[in-house]
Image (cartoon, rainbow, N blue to C red; front, side):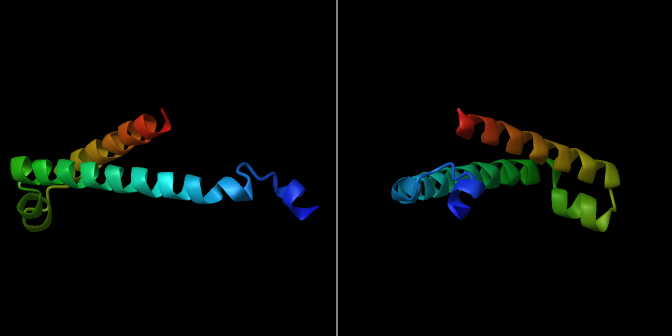
Length: 79
């Protein structure tokens, strides 16, 4: 009764397969995200500009780029 109320999307026998697939996509997304952050940190010298020079505008731009990249990765994973 409780399981019907919760509206299980994945049946319990398929849960392991879905979890493994999800973890693989999460790892791929994090690797791509880390590579993009590494490239951006080399181009914009993020640490110096944001922490030492208090460049708020660059912080907003880098944050926007990261959010946009996360949306693209999310859309690619969903298919």
